[in-house]
Each structure stands twice: as C-alpha cells, then as structure tokens.
Picture 1: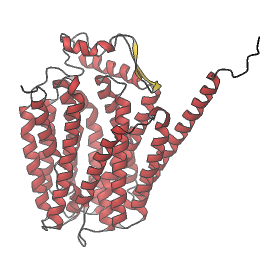
Picture 2 (picture 1 turned 90 degrees about the vertical axis):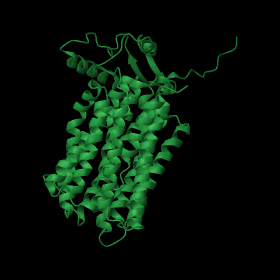
Picture 3 (picture 1 turned 90 degrees about the horizontal axis):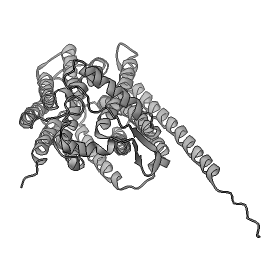
Length: 466
C-alpha cells in the first residue's frame, strides 16, 4: 500500500534537486567578468549584485501572502519559471542593465522559496513533517553539492568553457520546471484557506485551543502563550476584509511570539547573522577573483562550495545528537561561534592567500549552518506550525532589511562603493559586534540566574535541639 505522503515528497525532491543543481554558480563572478560578458569588477559587485538584495526584500512579504492565498503550487511554478528566465538571460543577455534585470528575476526565484518549504505541510500528515522536511532539505543540499562538483570537474579537468556550465544550469532548471505541474493542489493553507470542518485538523489544533503554555522542559522562559481564542481560523471566509483580518491576526501573533525572551534572543541572532552570512557568500567569489584571477590561474571554487555544503550538512546533522542546555549556555555559545565566524572572515580579508581564503570560507559556512540548525530547532520547539511560518518569515525579512542597508551603504556605487577587501573587513567587524552583543546577553543571563538561585535557596542555619 503506497503512502499518501510519498508522491508529493518525491516530486518536491526531484524539483529541489534539479533547481539547486547549478554547476555555474561557483563560477558566476568569473563568468560575468570573463570574455562572455566582459563586465568590470565595479559593475558586477557594486551595480549588478545589489539588485538581487533589493528585489528579494521588495518581494518577500507580498510573496509570503500570495503563497498562502494561491496555495503554494502556482508560486512553485513561478519560482521554476523564474529560474529558467534567469539562466536564459545569463546565456544571452549583455550589459549592466540586462544583468540587473536578471538579478530581479533571481530575486523572484529566491523570494518564492517559501512555497517549497511550506507546500509539504499542507498535503501530508503532521506525523510525517520531520521526515519529509529532512528529505527536502537534504536533497537540495545534495543537488547544490553535486552541481558544484560537476562544474569544477568540467572546468579544471575537461577545460570546458564557463558558457557551457550556464547551458547545463539552464537545462537543470528546465527539468525542474516540469515537476511542480504534477503536484496535487492543496485544499488548505495556513491563513487564507483553512478547513475548519476537518476532524483531523481539529485534533491537531486541540492542544492549542486552551489557555495554556507550550513549554520547553529545559527552560521555563521558553514559552509562547497560546490563548483560547488563537485567531488562526478566520471567521468569515467570504469577507471582503479577508486580507485585513489576516494582517491583524499576523500582527497579534507577532507581538505574542516575540514577547518570549528565549525566542527573541535566537531570532535576533538569526536575523543579524543571516544578514552577514548572505553578504559574505554573495561577494566571496569577487574576493577570490581579486586574490587569484581566473583569467591567469586555475581556480577551485567548485570544490570549495562542494566541501562547504557537505561539511555544513554534516554539522547540521550531528548537532541533533549533541546534548547541551541551550537555555543556559545558548547566548554564550552564539558568542563563541560568532567569534569563530568573525575570525574566518577576517582571515579571508587579510591573509591574501587563496588556500587560507578557501579554508576560512569552508569553516565559516559550516559554522553558520550548524548554528542556524540549532536556532531553527530552538525557535520551532515552542511554536505551532502557523506561528513557525510567521516567525521565520519575520526573521528573514529583518535580515534582508539589514542586508539591504549594508549593501546600500558599503557595496552599492550609489553609496560608498568600497573596495572588496574593505568590505570584508567591515563584515568581520560586523560579526565581532554580534559576538559582543551575545557575550553581554549571556553574561547577564548567567548572573541573573545565579542571583535568583541565591535568593530562592533555603536557609542553612542550624535548628537548635529541643
């Protein structure tokens, strides 16, 4: 007897693999600055790449609402089509304006990623969430790693021109485009299309429909109050004010979720670090190109991306088996690992040796993926599925706002348009500042716990004998 969750999961895995299989990606900057596009470093770094950040930020919130309203599948198809447009333009288009438009379409593809990770929750039973999420995330990492590895083999062993890597990437996107059309259309979504009559849904939501706290047993602060009138079911399905009701509900849930100190701390780290992480990986190739020009030397970007992806996936897997009292040591752990990240970025910037740069980048990505896995678990452990989508959406939006400001000031030619080495010095300083913030927060938390423990300890005075 076939499992009902298997069919959509297999299709999503096929889509995830081929949409993330991009052999050109580790060589994108050399491709744009090479003979095929003949763009300068300033044009690529300061005028073209920032457009992805701006379009991603602009589209994230409306796409979040549209994804739920359209019930995921149409947005997945839009994402697949955006990848095709992006890589078709990459093959044929020329000039800065065309590349900026290309970055806009890539921003559409990135913003619609929310549909990929949300769709599965609307068509499978809650008991399979962990399993299918693991499959979908693993297969995208596998596709990315294999794509990077194949790209490197073709470049360094077979001496294939970078243009043909763009052809393979476009072909993978075309294969990926087929899969979403065969996905079943969900009958419900998180906010706009809810099935109130489903006994199964009511059974799932029943624990959340009483006035109680969802608690993390290791930390009494790690609680998100779930009120008896948790307004995740809208009263009037045909109301003209449907959108306003959804926005009002989201705002109420936002205030409630971020009143939890533990969730707030992990969310702050998520937003701050994701901002810096995206900046570094976006411009790492430009730094490598400056240190070791691809026009004069053999480069190994593909191997580096493959190792970083596999090591990061392994770190994310291993952390699930590590037993640490994150409620006590979470902030100090975030401080320590943020220091490691800051040192890696500093080494990439100052030790201008390509092998040191590659090694530091691998450690940087693996450390971030380990921490983001811990943060994901710590945030999700105390949330219903609907609030899970809201909190991670808000965290990503804040990260993009910060990244946009950083890009506008530091990278964009309309701002300071700094040299790539000075940019990375700023990114290293940024992560050092994050480490200081969480050192102060962790120290304050430990001192407060010790103070509370002393106040609550029973008197130890001897009782005189009768």
